[in-house]
Image (cartoon, rainbow over all chains, first blue to last red; front, side, top):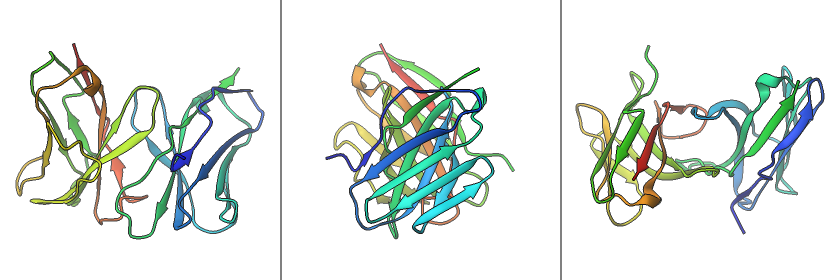
Length: 111
Length: 115
């Protein structure tokens, strides 16, 4: 079992729709969860962090965490073509120095 | 305040040659992480260094790969006798602390192609 599992996609949604990106993780000791966005040929950039169960909203982005199910998701409302990128999930255990990334879900927003 | 600088951005090496990848952290950052991203895959941790010290090299292949972060100058990831399977994007991230999470900023990466 991989430490972090994501559907590779591509996930294709029409402009204006909600994109839902999912991630499951195996390390029950994970306490911090990060979502990175990576445009093709570019470096990853942090877009959301979540640390406790429930929802966290930031603009058009909502991160959802369910530690009991070892599941974290990212919702993007009113998807724009500029949201087309690969989204990487990275759960982290406190004290662990480096991040463990999922292989990412490629999102395509169709104009 | 310049970001994390990696060079070269693109590097082509023939099989058997050496590749040297450089990473200059952000000003004030003394912690550096190297990650490798194979095509269509996520980033895989390789090594974590502080100035003059390797803290965690658990993700680094045992042979041909080495890393350093000297007191002066950039961090260097060195790959000896490169093989086709080394072709990947190599990203470095730096942070002011050792958490490696949201405080870490990524460079633009070096794309290594082995021919």
